[in-house]
Image (cartoon, rainbow, N blue to C red; front, side, top):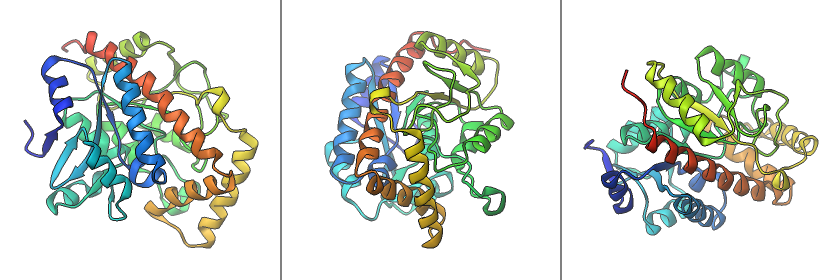
Length: 308
């Protein structure tokens, strides 16, 4: 047992009985959505995973421990606390050692999931290369984590606030496969199409699991991006979200918003400018990803990676 890990009773029982487990991040609770939609969505996503035959493990840093699986009280604390630190790889040791409250990003959740032996992680969207990165060097740590940590990340692609083309180029350079589900196109979070294709289209959990286990059996370390488009009825028009994104980006620049503050600022502005419709889309895509992730976790549990 890793000294920093603390498992909820539900997750501990799943580990003991061999049930499939799906990791969930916590920045979507603390920084990704307003209260009370954040806590309500977290609970609903967890229940979707249970209903699909897997066990949810929302991850956060609380009291000097990596909590794998959260209680109702812990979810409320994250959803309401203005002091929760957004934790990536760089921040993990600091937040743990100082006993602070931390919400895990994609990168940190991948690290914690691997420590806990969890192979599938469901999120909304991954981070990427920010627009203007050729001068700002603003590139999400999520991408490097995907290059080295053996966790499959089920997401709705990346947000259009990022440079999607450069993000995919970066992933290709570091050997991270990008899989699409149900279509060849790589989704752009609020919209089903980004204008770019994924590397491979694998529509079923069996196909995805076979691909992932083969990759790791070959000793090819690193994650896999499993990109799932938002359901068509919940997607936003691409032209509309692109125009709103450009406006929000301009406002961020005018207000000197940089670093970790950029994404929460942009999401809040996009929510305001779409009169709440973007939040509805965000919730819908996370729930959809949860169903795909639970199916993949079940398949990987039934057909684990063969020894090399």
